[in-house]
Image (cartoon, rainbow, N blue to C red; front, side, top):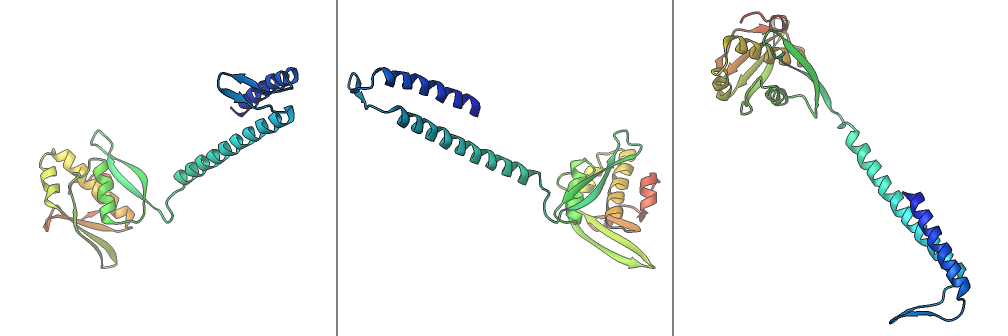
Length: 203
């Protein structure tokens, strides 16, 4: 793009220099517009100044675009990676993928599960905590009643996949041994270990 502009300026400069050489005296008048006499040196200087100013503006724009692109590609400082489990599509196993968030919370994991249709979009975390029991880390997750309504629309096989996905996601990311899931304070099922969830055992 810059080469094209340089060529255009040089071409115009050459034409004007030729014209100035033929008519070196007086001014050129066309209607009411008066073009003052300009030496070939002045014309060349003005042309180069215009070209340099235009190049400087383009360089600034390119630097701004490069900076914006670099910022958009950089990861959030302190981002935490986590694993989310979800149905493989045939309801006979789980897939997983790694995602990132500013911090690891139960709400972040439930939101990630919602993006994979494991929980409904309006499901909320009522409470979440962990305890040590007989040398094992146990998670306690209580979800809102919207989750119960969501499960009512599912087949038994789909429910099992949903429970396995929630259990696997929480157990792995919190490095826990067992999880108890409740809906509005009522137990959804018996406690599940990570191996049981990923093996698809009935709960």
